[in-house]
Image 1: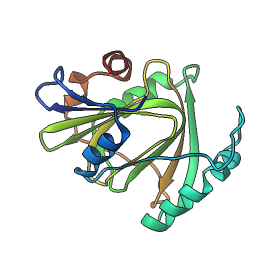
Image 2: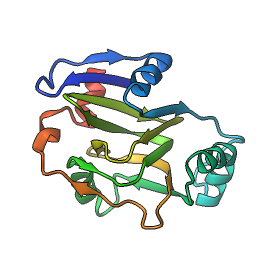
Image 3: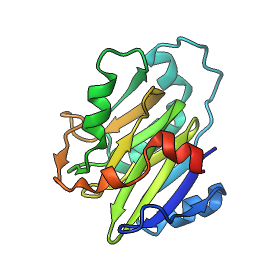
Image 4: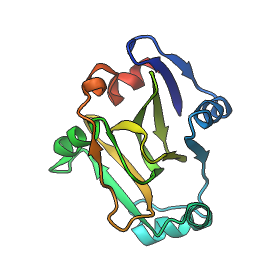
Length: 185
């Protein structure tokens, strides 16, 4: 279940939770974060290739490409048995920004995006069917959990792909991880 929690940046233990998709969409739109739910145009079989996944969501992907001028789309999958899962998790857990959008559509699995906007933190538990578009320059971090399990479509306007500018702010360490958030939600 998709869940949004909004915290004061100095009170990571006292969030206001939203479970309704319309309420989540409305809250995120107030901070210029696009959130949508997508449906595949046809069923995706287990073990589907990148091409098969992109074809299943082609209509939605093409709409976003036209809307924002995205140049490319790819599929990334990460599972708990990946040899670099712990290293990748630590990298994404550090607060950072991008000069480009960060767009993720969850084909399968889940992840926790936390956005540090003004004096608030918006923690969004994304699951299968969820699209999030984090605006360029937005301070945020991502937690895939101790045992990551997700497949995402990524869209880029810059051919360099995912390039982060780390803020050095330790704020992420004070907020719930994905595994803690799931138990709270």
